[in-house]
Image 1 (cartoon, rainbow, N blue to C red):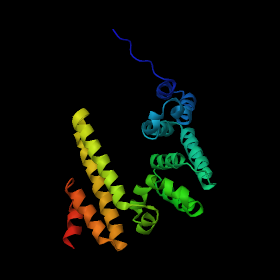
Image 2 (tube, helix red, strand yellow):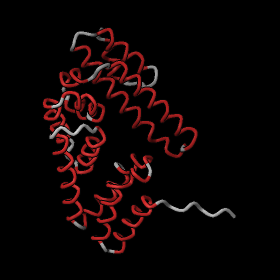
Image 3 (spheres, rainbow, N blue to C red):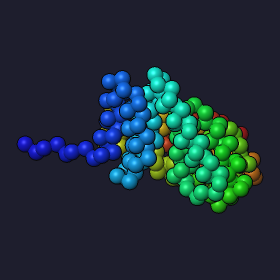
Image 4 (cartoon, helix red, strand yellow):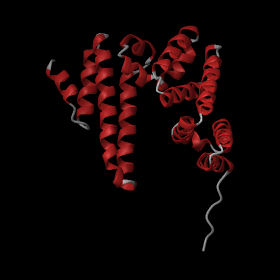
Length: 231
């Protein structure tokens, strides 16, 4: 029988964090969470997603019983934000701050950081824009979106590619999660409603309707259809 592949040190660190938390040694659990966050990508770049999703989720759960864990998360977020405000050119660091803020339930802080950073360092703002699109849409700030989006239609086209890829993956590999399809549909439709609205407000009604029509071939959404009916 083939032996199971050994875990790398990053995977082991995250597993250790959960083990120590369950055992009640919260200091050790926090130490392993910090190690994973700061070193996982050097072990394997493929941990990018896990590092900013599941790992932060477990870190926050630890913070519910061990406040020092939340304090450490806030401290690391603030340190990273200060680096960005000081001119550090790193979309990955900005994405770290975004993920921390989402985990902590303070999404508006991401947009606040972006606005300040982008005024001081416009080129850095352009690079980080993709990580703050959802926050801008939630805020309804069309002027900010149009200022930093180089090609709104291309962005929606990429979102459609991502959407189709996710749907295929669910169908082929995870049919038991087909209830998550609705989440993907809602995200694509909601983003398209906002972006098409921003385009229309800027005077490009033709591109706005092209987006609405294309997304409606994939997702039935009353907001998109009503916007088309008004034309």
